[in-house]
Image 1 (cartoon, rainbow, N blue to C red):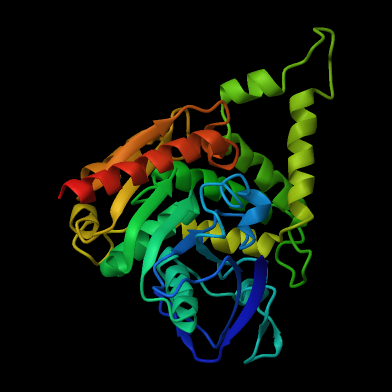
Image 2 (cartoon, one colour):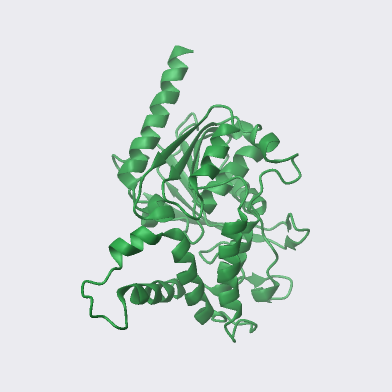
Amino acid sequence: MVTNKIYNHKQKFELESGGYLPELQLFYTTYGKLNEQKNNVIWICHAFSGNSDFTEWWGGLFGDGKLYDPNKHFVVCVNMIGGCYGSTGPLSTNPETEKPYYHDFPLLTNKDIVYSYDIIRNHLNINQIHTVIGCSMGGQQAIEWAVQQPSLFEHLVAIGANAKHSPWAIAFNETQRMAIAADQTWKENHDNAGMEGLKAARAVGLLSYRNYVSYAVKQHEISDDVLDNFKASSYQNYQGEKMTQRFNAFSYWTISKAMDSQHIGRNRGGLEKALKRIKAKSLFLGIDNDILFPTEEQKFLAKHIDNAVYNEIDSLYGHDGFLLEFDKLTKVINNFYSKVSARKRSA
């Protein structure tokens, strides 16, 4: 049974930037039961615009008889702070001013978001995690957490993720923020500020999540006589409008900044030294035509972490393949667990 809960952390939450949040509300989802040994925890770090109810967007991996079965596992996912799904974000009320934060919401990093996850872990009295799994920005956070607390995790699975966000990916995010800032309402302080800009931002983002081939296959015109209102045009507008029905421009801005902050080696002596801290048996999954998190980024991770392997899936959908290729993901992850078990038996 999927259960949604709220935890209120009434203490000041210090941030890497030097700022702080006076308190936190954390919205989280659990699925299944914690066993007596407390060693069946699967912890999900959700992607950029995802939420803690992973059965909505990653249902192909979670459920009876699936890769992660609630009859065997206790699955936990926390809505990241800065978002709009119940955890403290820009539309939340600042207890110090009794007004929504809006533009005054502080800068967040992936390190901060991971520290907030650890609050829930301690609240649930979890001292061991069988697998931390994340995709895209969630994969970044899973890696960050495995560096922060090497002994906490038995396995790490990161899909389409990286150790340091690239200039290319940061440029995509900045372009989306430019689209939001171009909206004349963005400077205002109300829930719907920047929403027209958000539509454009999402359309830009979608180009990085997919690729030339996926648009050629899925958005091509049947007739050669079309002069306007192309299928690809309609699709971009639809995706932009759809985003405004479930998100806000402030959270989009805040979370994209946090994604840009990804740098495992910051204040740790560099990337390679930081990655050597990871003790979890690790699987890094690349998607063959991912233009946002290209496969060389996952190969780099596997190269510099002990007990790590790299695998790759092919997908028409580019980076978004992690949301759609459930059969391929299940096969690769199951094979990873099987090989880890075989090494244990032979040791």
